[in-house]
Structure formats: C-alpha cells, structure tokens
Length: 188
Image 1 (cartoon, rainbow, N blue to C red):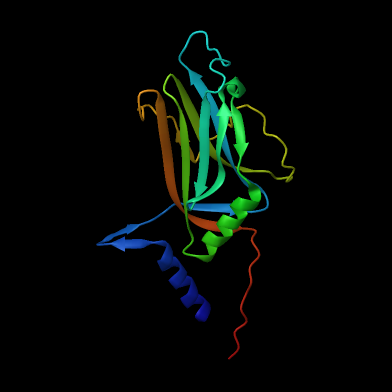
Image 2: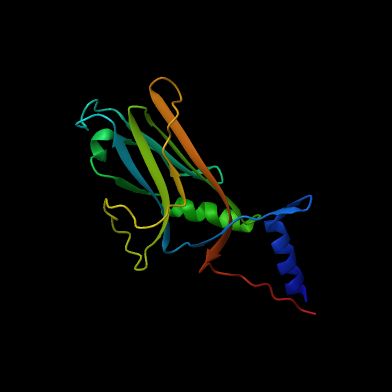
C-alpha cells in the first residue's frame, strides 16, 4: 500500500494543474551508459562562392545547458572547420552528474541550446539524443542524422547589425533508464 501511495505522489509532482488545465511535459528516457547529447552544427553561407577561410576568426559559438548547467561549451567552431557539418558531443560525465541530480529532484529537465554567429553566414544547430549500443564512443562523422532533432536553432533576426543569436528551450519529464535503483526495505 505504501508503494502505491509513493507512486501516486510521484505522479503528482510531475504534472501541474492551473485552474482546470493540467500541464503535461513529454517524457524523455535516457540511459546514462549508452546515450549522448549530440549537437550538429553547420554553416549556411549566403555568399557565392562561399569562402570558408575569410575571415579566419569568424565562427559559431555553441552552448548546451541542462537545468542551467553547461554540459557543452560555450565552444567556438570556426568557419574554416565548417566546410562540412560538425558533430559536438556533450561531456558524458557532466551530463550524467546533472541528470542524476535532476532525477533526485522533481524529475524535470530543462534543455537549452544557444548559438551565436554572423548574420551574413547563418549558423544552424540541432540537438539529438544518440544511443551508442556498443558504447564505443567513436566519431559519428559529418553526415546528417536521419531523424528529427529534439531542438533546432537557426536565427533569422539579428541581435545587432552584424551578429545573430538564437536559443531553443525544451522542458521534459526525465526518466533514467538502466539506472541503479536502491530499494528501501520496510518492516512492519
């Protein structure tokens, strides 16, 4: 009976009621051993022909935050390195630390992807959750992943005369898969 009471109280924590409407967040199941957050960055050049070497210091700044904790970046991918799209994998240990802390709390995860770049050469970033079944940690390559990203950002409104900035946010209900569970023994 106590277990059923615990489950009912856990479900109440994950949903919020405002008036007669209940807010429901999508569930995201993450395996801490095999899953990685991966950001795919590309450069959409508007000049013809594109010149990835000029100016050499121009690039895209990328940052991924989980519950306001940075797990990737802020890092700069220079334009000369974006002749082909680039994958950036979030720090696995830092992600696991943040996700475990989120699972101990109310079970919500706020995901935020932030990019900055030049208005003339629009940056684009997409966030994927990728599962490595063999846990090899090998490079993904530069091809586009054949799926829908969790988040994607391509700013079109300039932050100032030469610069664009954009961010995408997502709140989910977090469920850790394959995580060790510690059961409390209850004695009558």
